[in-house]
Image (cartoon, rainbow, N blue to C red; front, side, top):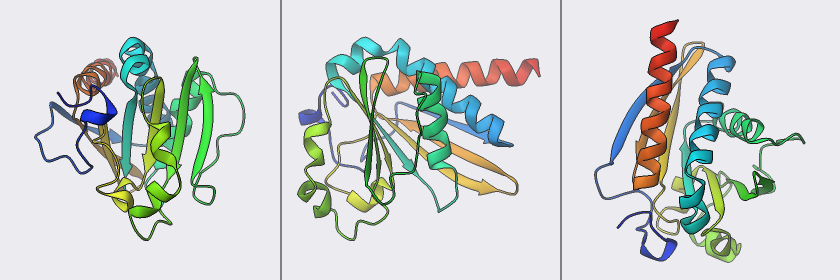
Length: 188
């Protein structure tokens, strides 16, 4: 079963069809913050599964696509009040939010997937951890399959986000986010 434990996960990029998929149009930074807040809310609702199995979010997209802004919005919604900076140079920024370990990775500077193993990051993945990974393709084959994969693209002044879930927990989160997004879009 995909996504039940790190040892049973396949390597990124998933070889299976997603269990759920959705597309979001983000017109501005406020929409990015809203999507991040919805993701944080969905993660809170899946807390028991995350405590047992962990949760991996892959964030792909060109430079400036909004990956860090989305993670920042998620962390703020989870209660982080301190600075939330891009981990581009440090590779990792750790946080403890809602009593979960939240690891924000950025693998943009990786030249080889083996750098992931050499950095000792593998031990951070697993029960009780949310791992948000920018540029996961730079560590292809070394990372577990993401529970949720987000691909961000610049579209004029806004952004487009293609989301795919590869675990039951990821699908539950994505389905909840999509329903809340649609409800808000229908109301406004």
